[in-house]
Structure formats: structure tokens, C-alpha cells
Image 1 (cartoon, each protein chain N blue to C red):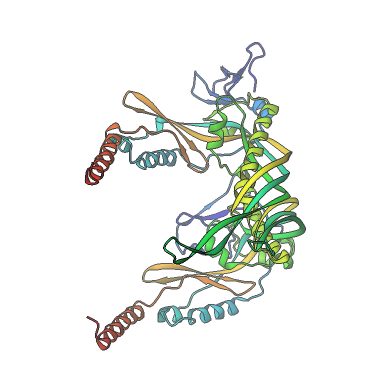
Image 2 (cartoon, each protein chain N blue to C red; image 1 turned 120 degrees about the horizontal axis):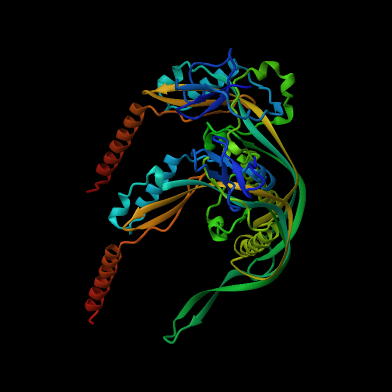
Length: 272
Length: 300
């Protein structure tokens, strides 16, 4: 039976791996971890996506990100953030899409437009995160992941020992999200292909196939003014995701300078 | 676990072995001798495909009802102070049919697209004025439409009226598990008494009516639209018999009981909250006073 580590602060749940499991939660840094055995074992991924970026390069990307803005505090630039490897659960839905569309196209009519309707067929694939510990904006910012490089779990010995978050979203929930994403993509695709000014799509999904994957990221916690902030790096693309704090001194000085400049301009122009 | 063939509908208590009478509309009960929860597992396994477990605990359901009461500004002041106690709440599993399918259809519609015309006219005073008018050009549009229907819920028992079943949505049936007596023990689990075909007929009408609304409101393009005809067909792919969790609260208030229903998975609360006649009267009086004042200012 697989044992799970659950954080009582943020609810983040990962599979317990003796040599990898840290004393603090990988998602929030809290030390309120509980070890438990679930009644039903969590779903196993059908494949693990290997990282393209090694920890050293991830740390370099983080440092480049931290130095990327004048407004970030010096403490962030000089911080040593330990980035831990982590596998996030994600569903891949592949489906044959029949998109019935209706929209408006430019035409030499009095209104300059006319309505059109039709249908398009194609095969589509989307990924939907099944993580419960990360927020929706964080997950959206981390994307995309390319599962075409995924290797079966039994052939990914080293990766299988990475801490792995268990799926917190049901396939049914993910399916609804996947359909919404496919519909949005279908609207953009049909509008572009058919040169439509506006387009609505009414899609039907058939021959659907659902697979659970584990996708790699690096996660770290940066504590600023006593408040932990989460930093994430997509281990495939190197994209850094996090909400960096702003340097209060710099912001205050900038506001004061702007106010002084405004006042000086008013005096010069003779405003009363 | 039928106890005795001579006692129809009786199930043996797993605690004391006494026969527990199980009404035909229930799948669970409590032993009158030792208070042990008893589940008619054999009948449930034959009639239920899946159970959605509770995700909202009793205390969270009570808190959700308290928040629902506080959110009603027109409710009497005493309502906000009403305490929802554990004993006011009963956990229940309601039988519903979850229907998956695909709707496809053909429509004909009139699509209106606005355009503006600018004309210059000479007025009575001899001056020329430019007038801009918004006109509508109408087109006919024919096409096809479709969508997948997932987990449309239809009531499976007369105890759960169809409007209540619809209002309780959504449930994430992805967490539904195969029937296990441990999931329903201690809760009131109701049996299916609405025939599958009857429930599917009701769902069929609901789904096609929703499709017509969706096409007319959201799908058709243009500034004005008029759906002339829609011929749609529902292909039902799967019907599952599912028990969904709800909390039912009966809270005593002013000599009567206020009844609330809480979705046991999302915490969504349904139920009417009484309105304070003083507050409503005050608002009506204030509005009337303002109108009277304006009328008086306007010269009576």
C-alpha cells in the first residue's frame, strides 16, 4: 500500500518516498506533514515526462528571473532558494472533434457582413492539470508540458523516486475542463481558417482517450518579511513562475519622486 | 444480509442480529435494539451503480447554512443569530440517474446584423441636419449543432422532486465509487422508485429544451437572432444509478421548522429564508416617501 504525506496547512499531498521526503511541505514550506495510508490507492500515471532541465540550470533560471526586474528586492536576488524536484499529475485528453460553427464573415452587403455556418473535423489533444496544491493561475503559467517524451513508470526508476503529487481532480472534472479548452481552441482555429469576424463553436467529442501523466517541475520556497512565497520552474521549458515581492524602499522613493516631479511641474506652469 | 425469509423486507442487524424492518423506499436504517446502522447491501448492490461520498462534513454544512441565513439582508434579525446544531442535520443519499449522451441537431434561424446609415435632411427652419439611423439587415441561416451531455441528473425517487434534483447540481461524479455499505452506513440512503425509462424521458425533455435555449442565446451569431426551427436528437450512451450526498437541516424557528438542503459535495445551500415584514414595510414606506416628495416637488 502506498503511503501519502499530506500537508495540514495547504492540503498538498505527495507519495511518501523515504529518501526524498523532506521535513517541510514542498508546496508551502509548512512543517505540518501527516503520513497516512489511503483506503483506496491513488491512480498511477501511465507515464512520467522526464525533465529537460537539470537542477543546476533551474537554479540559474531562477537567478535570472530574480534579477529580471529593478523593482525586486536585493534579498530575492541574493537568496539561495533550494529547488526540489516534484512531479505534478496532469491528464491528457485526446479526442476526435466535430466542430459545428456559426459566425460572421465580411461580405459586400449593406451591413458589410453575412452569417455563415459549417463544420470542421480534426483530432485534438489537451493537458489538464490534476494538482490540488497549486493555484489555477500558477498551473496555467507553468504550461505547456509535452507528454510525447513520457516514459512508462516501470522504465523511469530514478524519476519514480521523485516526490509525486497524487491527482486531486477526478478525470470527470478534468474532462469538463478539457472540453472547455478544446472548445476555445476550436473557436480560434475555425475563425482563423475560415476568416471569420466572430465565431461560436458547438463541438462534439468522440473516441476520447484519457491518460494520467506525471510532469516534472522544481519547487522552492522563498521567505520574505516572514511570509513564504512559492517559486516554480517548469522542468521542461525552464519557465519560472512565482509572485516576486517588490522592494518597498524603491517603490516609496519612486512614488515620492513622481509626486515631487508633479509638484515641480505645477509650480513651473503656474498651476494654483 | 436478509435475515429471515419469513419477514419480508427485514435485514439482520450486524450488531445484535435482530431483524430490522427495511421499508421498500430505504436502503439503510438503524437497529431499534442497539442503534447500529444497518444497510440492505444486497438490494443496494443490485440497484445502485455508484455512490458519491460526502466531502462536506456535518460542521461545514451547519456553517454553510449559517452563512446562507446571514446573507439574507431582508430576513428577520433573529434569523442571523439562529444556531444550526448537529442534531438539526441529517445526512442523506438521494438516488439519481446520471445520463451521458450526445445531442445533435439541425436549425434554421433568422440573423439580424445592424448597420448604420447617415442621411442629410433639411429641417423646417431650412437648416441641413445629418441623421444617423441604426438599421437591421436580415439573413437566413441553416446549420448543424451538437454537444456532449455529461452527468445530466434526473431524480430517481419521488422523495426527490425533479426541480430539487436540478437545483442541487453540480455534483462531481468523478469521485463516485462502487457501492460499499461503509459509505452509506449511518446515513439515510433512499432506494430508486422511479423507473429508468420514466427518468430518461424527463431528462430527454430537459436536455433538448436546454439545447434550444443554448442555440438561441449563445450559439447563433448576429446582433438579433430568431431561432425558427430546431430538430435535435439525443443519443443516450450511458445511464448510471448513483446515490448523491445531501445534508437536510430542519431548524426550529418561531414555532415552525425551516428546511434547508446542502449539497454534500460542494456545500451549496438551498432553502427559503423568511422575510421580515418590518424590513420590507420600511423599504416600501421609504420608497413611497421619496416618490411622494418628488411628486410634491414637481408641483403635485
